[in-house]
Structures are given as C-alpha cells and as structure tokens.
Image (cartoon, rainbow, N blue to C red; front, side, top):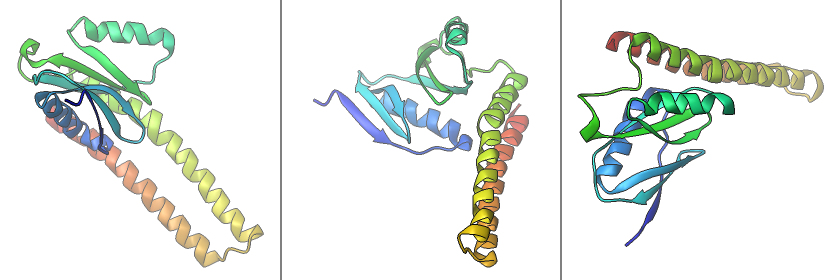
Length: 179
C-alpha cells in the first residue's frame, strides 16, 4: 500500500474555504497533509481515514514571533502542520471542534488577516507591476518597441493588476458579509 501521495491543486485567495474543504476530504480518504510546496503541490502521508478540520491563516512572521503564534493557536487545540510564503496550515480533529470552528475569534481578526494579505501580497505586486511598466516604456525608447506595442502591453498589465485587486476586494467584502 502506498504511504505517501503528492497532489497538485491551485487555489487563489478567494478559494481558502475550498482548499480547507479539499484537505478535510483528503483526510476522510486517509491522507494527512504533511507539506505544501510551491506552486500548489501537496504532500500527504497515509493515515486511517478520519475527519480533520483544516484552517489557513496568512501571517508573515519572524522566527522570534513564530513560536508565540503557534502556541496561541495550540492553546485552542489547533496544530500547525506546515507554512508556505506566510500561509500557515492548521488542523484539529473534528471530534474536538464545537460546531464550525475558525481560527478567527471575530470579524476584526479575519479583517486583520485580509489586511496582512494586502500588505504582504498586493502592495509588492503593485511594485513589480510598476517596474514592468518602466521596462515596457523604456523598450520603446531604447529597443525599438512601437508605441502601440507598449500601449497594448501596458493595458494588459493594468488589467491583470485590476483583476488581482478585484479578487482581494471580493474576499474583503465576503468577510464583511459573512460576519
């Protein structure tokens, strides 16, 4: 019998609930999450099928802060499984949960998580976009790219930025509505 399994799944920020649900179903099928690798590879090991609740949080931490962070959730029965680029994966046996437990005690703490995501992901993305736009327009001056080509690339890059910002905004609104 196979003792480990690697699965590929890609989720966006708006898919956190779907990712948690998928991980729970994997445990029910006898696969416990061990690690997550970029870009979307999940490593599991075989267990007896069981019902485990998974929750994700985004919180970039220094090594110093990490122990207190892990202990805070451990005090409520959550075990941290793995971390990847500031995302932390927690688990708790469903038998120990009282209803639909979350990592966040209230709406404000979930909003804080979204704000950390915006600061940790969207702001640097905007910086990268600006650098890309500078290179695009510099190419019109030095590499012979036409104005039309540069304008087309600029519009494309701005649309990608807009769609990314829209995803963050939708997640933010979804949190406000659900609480």
